[in-house]
Amino acid sequence: MRIYSRLLAMATDAGASKGPFRPAPAALLPPIPLYRTILRTHRKKLPVEQRLLGDMYVKAEFRAHKDIDNPVQIIGFLSEWQMYAQAIEGDTWKGEKMDKAKIDKMSDQQIGQLYELMQQIKKADAEDAEAEEAEVVVPLDDPKKSDQ
Image 1: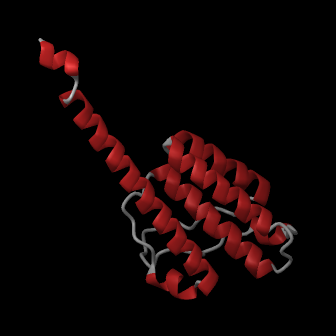
Image 2: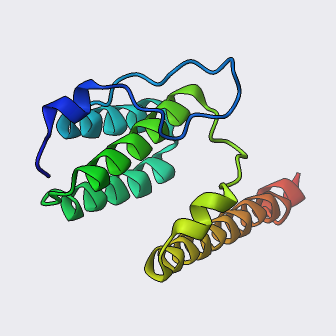
């Protein structure tokens, strides 16, 4: 990813809401500090399973975009990841739904990836529910308690 310092030094309004009270976002971080910030935020704010999944995804995305030369794509990529990091730091991501406008802009491949992620999350939730149910059933069938 080629860095254009004049683009990174300027504040951007990418993703800013239409409200008059929202402060202008800070200048974009360069790719490596942003990458480190995201991983550090994952380590501090996310549970282990979510952190592992998030770290793998972040690493893959930054690797896939490291050779991008188009400044518009670089700005879009960095601004979205910076907003993501701010959302994770502020815990505003919990229970939040995706913007329909963002979904409409996604390619078929991105929507497929999002669908696969949703399936993995549902699968993990089902496994957690089964494990939790098994933990509840085991103490009831414990032979030591029936002898007493």
